[in-house]
Each structure stands twice: as C-alpha cells, then as structure tokens.
Image 1 (cartoon, rainbow, N blue to C red):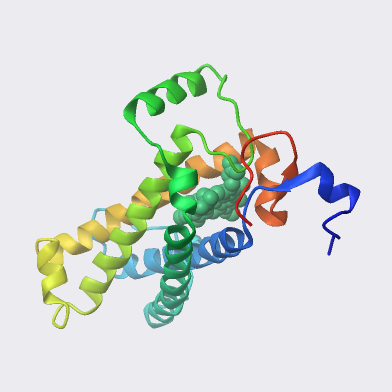
Image 2 (image 1 turned 180 degrees about the horizontal axis):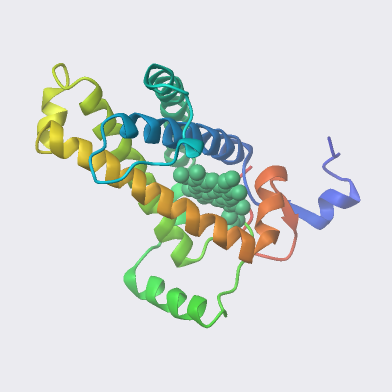
Length: 215
Ligand code: HEM
C-alpha cells in the first residue's frame, strides 16, 4: 500500500471511493450471472418469437440456470442495497449524479456527437449522469418485477402494481434489455476513453481535475 505522503500519492488523487469500486465490480459479476442464467430460463418458455443462443447462457439445464439466477440474485440485492445506502448516506449520488437537466443532457449529447465531450475521471458529464441514474432505476425495476413473478401469490400487491403476472414478466424482460443496452454503450465509452478504466480499479487518477472523491 502507498504511503499518503509518497510522491506517487501527491501526483494522484482519489477519484472513486473504495465502496463505489467494490460494489461496482461485484455488481458487474452478479449482473453477468443474472443475465446469462435469465436468458436460459427465458429459453425454456420464450415470451417472444426467438431464443438466446446456448453459448450465451449459464446453468446447463433449467434447474441449474434457476439455481444460478437465485444465487446471483442474493449477491446483486445485498450489493445493490450497500451501494444505494452508501450513495444516499454519503451524498455520493447528490455530488456525482446531480444536477441533471434536459439542457445539460442535450448540450453534452451535441458535444459527444462532435467528439468534443471533455472527460475527467470521477467527474461525470450529463450523459453519464443520465445513464447511471437510468440504470439504477432499471435495476430497481428488474428486481421488483423479478420478485413479483417469483412469488406472485405472497407478493400479489407487487404483481398488481405492474398490472398482473404477465405484464410483470414483460417489465422484467424489458428492464433486462435496458440494462444490457446500457452495458453495451457503457463498454463502448470505456473503449473510446480507456483512461477511465484503471481508476475504477485503483481509485486514483493524476491530479489536476475536479473529479476527486470523498474517500
Ligand atoms: C466489465 C464490465 C464493466 C466495465 C469495464 C465498467 C467500467 C466502468 C468505468 C471505467 C467506470 C468509471 C467511468 C468514469 O470514470 O467515467 C464505471 C462506472 C459506473 N458503472 Fe461500470 N463497468 C462495467 C459494468 C457495469 C455494469 C454491469 C453496470 C450496471 C448495470 C455498471 C454501472 C456503472 C455505474 C452506475 C457507474 C458509476 C459508479 C458511481 O460513481 O457511483 N457498470 N464503469
């Protein structure tokens, strides 16, 4: 571990708190297991006229995929609650995801289209803020709809909130599709700006920008 007064530490600053990094990577693993096992469960009784390729699924057979789905579900929920609790208790969401308005999103979308959007590690532009806020809402929707189709008798009020079991199943599918779409754009942005990746592991980035974190 680096000493706080070492030259390397003086040249760099913390841009992602440990809690954010740990929950982010645990979430990435849990989400991958959830989506791949979910696709196998979908294949057993497709909602639409297609199936997901077997190589993109985990579990091997329906019982195995369901076991994977529920094991990853506990990890995803516990980790998600820790992240949400941390984000609200420390002001992380307020500091990093707000303010967020249509004006700033349109301005940054225009800059992004002209490849002129500046990026500082740990300081999110309006497009990132919008995407991160949206994926948090999709995460809540996917978990709530999933619980309602898992226990439709005990949690009938939750299924009713979605308009019944069949609609809840569709909400679950489309929330998953939204999350997969988010991840595709998220990974494309990491490829376009690869300097964002290392700080998400180490927490640190060179000094000289305003994106420093609370840790
Ligand atoms: C291998 C897959 C992934 C990679 C390589 C990756 C990479 C990154 C990087 C580099 C950042 C920091 C961006 C920056 O500083 O501008 C970030 C932040 C973030 N990522 Fe990912 N990510 C992955 C998967 C996911 C998944 C599956 C989700 C959610 C479904 C997700 C949600 C987020 C969120 C919400 C943030 C902001 C965290 C915060 O500050 O609270 N990521 N990711």
